[in-house]
Image (cartoon, rainbow, N blue to C red):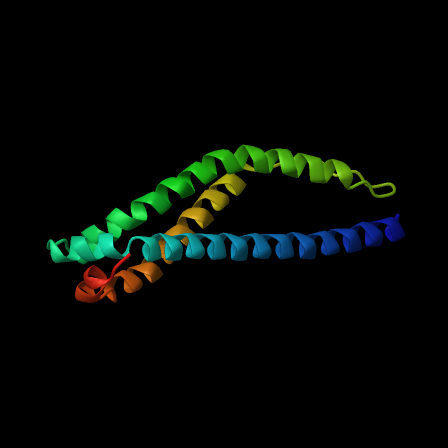
Length: 147
């Protein structure tokens, strides 16, 4: 029994390492996708943003105008991603079959809260970073350029 207990503890330590790696990779992917989405959004709308700045919009208003889209997309991603994540988790756990070890599949409600908070946190973080890019847009040069 002691040997079995040591084996199970080793398996669980390996699982914890793999879980941390997957969570870290998912977080990095989420940040990169949101950053690229914001960057492309701003790059394609430079003239539009410059026009808003010329019209006298405050930086906070012009930022809200641009980043409202990314916030809506993030919320849509949460709504679609949570159920799909449950399905993926169920599939992965059904594939983990180790000799003499069975895993009880359970997702705590706090896990959903962590997921939602992480995605919203990444979205806000990317928005704050991208606001600097909006502030650096030269109104005169942007409006002079020919598309």
